[in-house]
Length: 544
Image (spheres, rainbow, N blue to C red):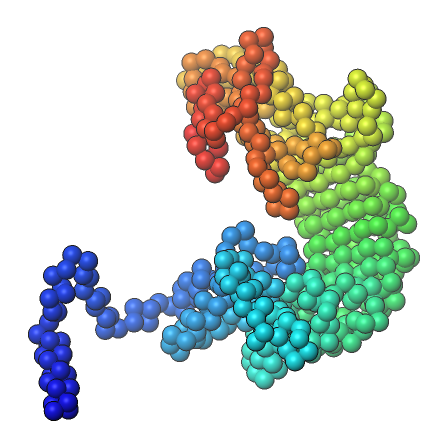
């Protein structure tokens, strides 16, 4: 009898399925099941388009830069979760598997934690007894991930050939040198890998890892040589090692100028060179020589803590037409280049887009007439001039250098500059209080201006006792459309959130005080409105 009841129950359910939905379909919250598509619409997509779609699932797989794991972190999102989602895409079908797998193993990241709420749940699970090894030590998740990745690429040479970059946290690469050596030994096309600090100074504990890199990874694109690696640096000439090197950092080496020139000449594809903490470096090392090879043509040149390099050495390097044409970024930090001679460098570098100057001065700006800073291509300018703290009531020495910068901006000698960084907290207000441009005529296009700042400018200022950059957008009056009268420029002063320190943004608005000046009035809510009617609506659209 029980068997017959079960049989009747099954027959009723089958008939109900054949006749359509039951009485539950009349409920208000009932939603019919979605129709199952009869074919896969992605089969019509070309493979490049399908691969492009997968890059939105896991954005960091397209990071072909040579930045470290800390430098290449995305602003939002969770890299481990994105990689997990891309791995799930490989299980859909064979066509998805081919494209997703290629992206999954091109640029590999091994992160220590999840950057989402999932990390809270996983951290609680790791505290359980089941997540401990036999010695009672918790299992290190990044080390397990590295071990799994090492096993995968060692078992499949095809996957090992796909890997172009490998990034991992600092503590992980310092504690797993032998595992990293075993991993890179099967990655012949590797272009960048996060390495422990000892490998750059020829530390004995990193000798095996460096030998594996030199023997198995001929396509490395970024390397550093620091104090202690003078021997391996001197072996570069004639060794034909890492001929495709593009980014090179030299810090604290004690070598002769001739060895430096010969080593750089042996790396013909260098485009980014950093020379740091080299007090012996002089102008002659950058000047052309008949007995020594020239420094390679660079796109980015960084000089830090090189007090004997002056403007003569920079202009001597830029005397070659190829160097002048290629150089796009120049950094001068604590060098012998006086800020009053920067106009000479800008005049000899016609394609320079970024200039970073970090210098401490002890003397006032020269009294004699100095040409203004002038460049038709410069877009980013770091003008961080500092001076020792002056006595109470005495204007600091660096104030005269910022006066020179303001005169250069108002003369429209830097028409393409969009971002300006200064180490003067009062610089935005000083720029706003500068005399407005003089108007003449009328005509169809409204009044025309002579002098004054004509382009929109983003000013980032920071005082000596501040940790965050304060952002002030400057919008000249004639970029807002035609008006019947001239209005005073209004600055919405807001401190950007610093990535390393955090903190709330400082907000204020500059309004007229009735005597030709401006006052900074604090703002409670985030929508101040100026006397000219300009209103800030969002962080992206500064002005409407």
